[in-house]
Structures are given as structure tokens and as C-alpha cells.
Length: 128
Image (cartoon, rainbow, N blue to C red; front, side, top):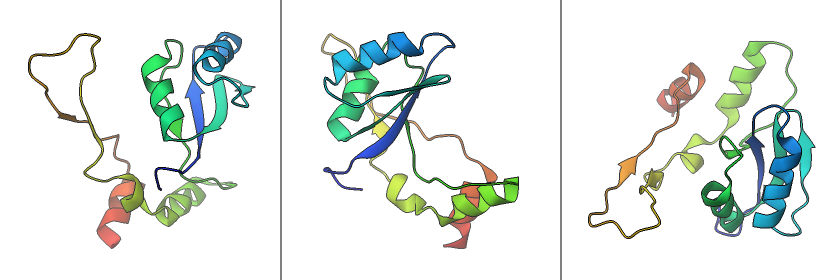
């Protein structure tokens, strides 16, 4: 994961809003190839696009980054895939956020926002 990396992204939205989300993303990232899917929009983008989507999208519920992909038939296949991910690359001390407002805050407060922890990720961390 470098500053020049491109990631596969998925922006979920409310049902029936996919076309509007495509239009919004098109304005935020002109020329980006977009794919409307059921429940959201997928695309590929670098760090600048990711940040623009996080700050600029009003229709997306969140911006998700694909960290792994595999076929599965059983939940054990999903756990196996999660164990193959190098989580140390994705979960680092740099994952902090600063509350953003359009006005300059008098005091800057840094908030650590860890993601949800699942049994697959916690056991992966213990094994290393």
C-alpha cells in the first residue's frame, strides 16, 4: 500500500439511489470508470480520489476498500481468506481521523476510529 496505489472501492447507498450516486461520483472524480451495482457503486481510485469521495459524497453511506477477493461456498472459506490478508498493512497507527468542519476549529482533536473487530481478524493478529 503506497501513496500511488489504486484500490477497488465500493460505495454503498440506499436502494434506488445508485444512478444518483454515479452522477455525484462523476462530478467528484471526472472520467473515473463507474459501475452501478445493486446497492451501490464500484470503481477504482487512488488516495486522492478516496479522500475526495469521503469528504464530498452526500449519498454514499461509506467508502469501502476491497482488501481481498475470493470465491466461497462456506463461511470457513471467508475466514481462510481473512487469514491470508496482511492486516498489518491496512491497520496501522496512521488510521486516525480529525473531525472535519468547514470552519477552523479552535482546538484540533484527534480521534482514533478502529473498525469493527471480527473473530477472523483478532485470531489473525494473535497468530503473528
